[in-house]
Image (cartoon, rainbow, N blue to C red):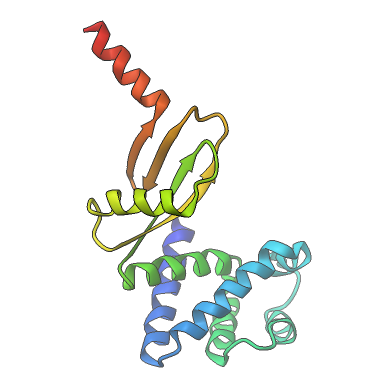
Length: 177
């Protein structure tokens, strides 16, 4: 929890600085590519979390690996590393993206279905549900074959359960009354 709070503070500072310098898209792109490196390279993850490698060495390696990153991103990575918080960089990147969605009035969530949705169905669901939320709705799809049918939408602490199992449960409760 404390590390998430720290990541949010770092992400907020980076967002404010990138907005002030007009580099939001560049920084956002850099952080997306950083997340890709973290996902694809186990060696980079080990390197990032290694307490044995000195800060100045880590910063030099960032500059070698992340060659086309903006200078603001590189200085930010250097600051976080010098503060001994480089292990927070992946969470800072996630929080930065979340803050940017909020800044752009985008509400993100997930929609879980038993099979993949076609684009028309997905857009219809988004249109019908978006009135309940302030901002533009963006849903990431998840497929769960154990779901009998229907869908479940999760956005922040809200859940819309329109699954067949949920409807059957409601029907059973009504019949038992």
